[in-house]
Length: 494
Ligand code: NAD
Image (cartoon, rainbow, N blue to C red; front, side, top):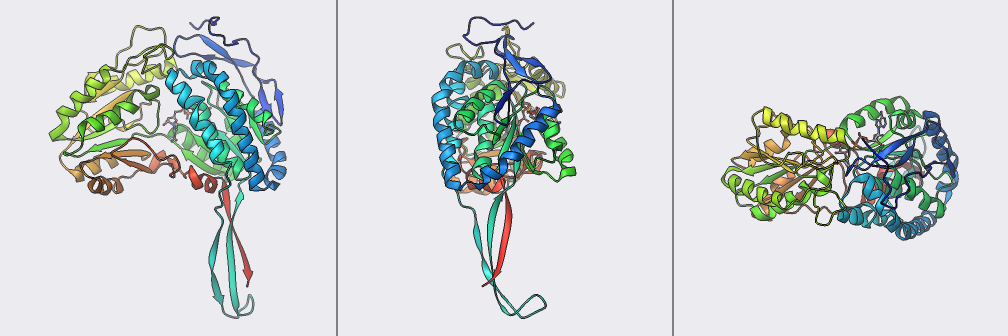
């Protein structure tokens, strides 16, 4: 049973509000508790927006659009740079709250939740990126539409309009920054709808937006525990685009619901990353890569390589090495020194991850280690490793979004590629092979929007997105600007 906390310095009684049209507005549907997954205590009471308030936010963004898009890219960039400075100054004071609501271990909370990437995304898009381009002139004969001549054209990128940014719980601020920064840089205005589980840090971001002069309808924030407010954004005729990151099931729902108003969509959805190991792979390096993401944020990472597709000749060595690494992953309260694996986000999600692991055991897989529920007050899962897994099992096909890795065996590159591609997902996959040429050749055959060779480290400005059920569209780098713009061709007689 959750109880109020009094020993953390977090103001649990704070009256959180919605940011609509530059005003902090009381939520019309009351509040709901935000829970610290480390111990079930209440972190705060989040505002519950109604569908009507979500529509108000969309209208405010629509009204702010002409003045924001009229600014030059350089001026928008200056304002984003100012925002990055304000966030950098404020963010350390957000740490305790964001750590409590997300359940992150201290290193993740400092380094990933309120630290580098969030600020970096605003800084990166503060430097204008020109994605306009010219088209080769077209010689035209005299005809019904005009005299002979050369027709020239240039391709401009125009803002899409109002963008609803609907985000997941795992990295609340980074996910929001990854959408809002390129959307604003491209001349759009936005409505943010953070995940229900941990929206408070995103509401703090609203304070930084207001201080940097971006709160006057250019950026609006509505929070809520249910689907009503985000569904109202998807249906709104004031919203031109939905930029969504979250589960494939909700993404499919938004895609269908947005069709009636022809929403542009950017969909960043679930993943079940494959990691192919050839017989000459560096087993230690591959296992280190797997272990890095296995327990990272308790496995609540969409890009994690959770399906290890290992050559049979190195299977035993790989499993033993992974088991050894698992022994070092201390599970516990994210704030306790030495903790590597904190809680998963909610009790319901913990139960789901546990039943996912037992479905593997029920289908004939062997749990080599982990999967137990530690004797702790919060929602913890010990990192689990499953072998004797076949491709038809749920554990090999579905995303756990928890610290669960399965191992499948292969006898050669063709079989490895077939196993890796036998998935409805295609977000991020990995190849560990003895030489770069072979790793590259295997990588090119994988049905995956992103592939990393002999590393789990992504390039932060390469295009990011998924094949198949992992999504639609790409962002990051210049692809972020492309994602939030419409293509416009201007033609003339030269
Ligand atoms: P989720 O799909 O449950 O929720 C995401 C958001 O959708 C929330 O803000 C929620 O309020 C909103 N939502 C729910 N119903 C809606 C509706 N009917 N209409 C509009 N919006 C609605 O996802 P989650 O549990 O918060 O996050 C976990 C998922 O996110 C995993 O599947 C993970 O793989 C995925 N994810 C993907 C990426 C990526 O970049 N591809 C990154 C992070 C997380």
